[in-house]
Length: 352
Image (cartoon, rainbow, N blue to C red; front, side):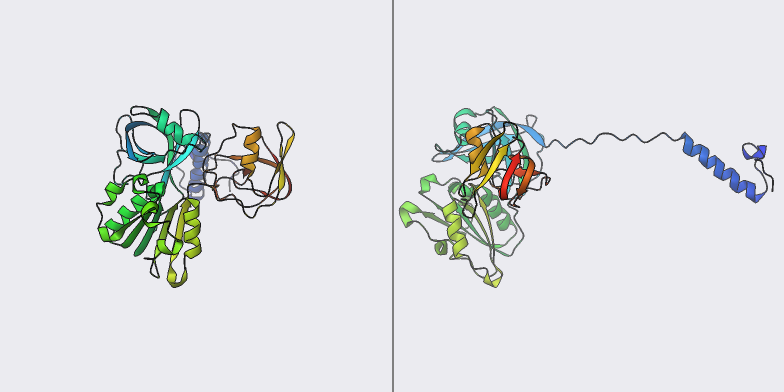
């Protein structure tokens, strides 16, 4: 065997099979050397924010208005499913979550509805007093923390403004030909939004209960039409949800799905301390309060939105200490949701 590479390796084709294989190998090396190094671009988070125009503001009931939101150029909006909500960034900087209560088949606009709450944190008052037709709002989403699952039989229970996520579910169940019933309760008929739209459905499937006419219903009253094997979807004020949960019977394959518009009270908490690393201050969180409530007394600008652990707006860095597992957000595990999470013992140090 010759110990040098014949000139024919890079010129004439050699006849010896060995040199044919060697020629192919070295030519392959030359091609590899000529390839450019791959360019790896920095990954950037996907921006899911939209700037929408308020096309209409409509009074739906006493202290309830709806907003119809569309793209400035009327392009189709991202699709959504019943139970979805939008994160709305208000002009003041407040971030609030509102259920989509329009028709998912309408890709040209989103609809939300807001009840005026004078004793609330200010978001509803801003919607009612400062947002008008023609204004622009930044939103994120849609996102779904209250998914609507395909079933043969449903009972929907809505209390007041709790009709907003339920109304698209009713439409979906009706279109699918499912066996469904709706119980819609509130203080008075004047306080109940979208009664006119419910008249589009068969009257024997919709039951409206007004406290001033029928009295305050019990959980058993609200679930009277829930036969075994029924999927119960419930949204409304906390006392109503608590009553439904207490009366619900899971035997027979029934399932209960609910969404709160206000955080559940802290009933099983233990006191703990949080140290604010940026100031060195240490705050005591009582057993019946959230870290968010205590921290906002010292830092009024601390961000929050849902107050139930879903949106992740209040997530802050956890620098030291052991936290419990109340965080239900799908965000990374290196943070602490000050609206729901607590210490599993001792003191927590937060990046605040």
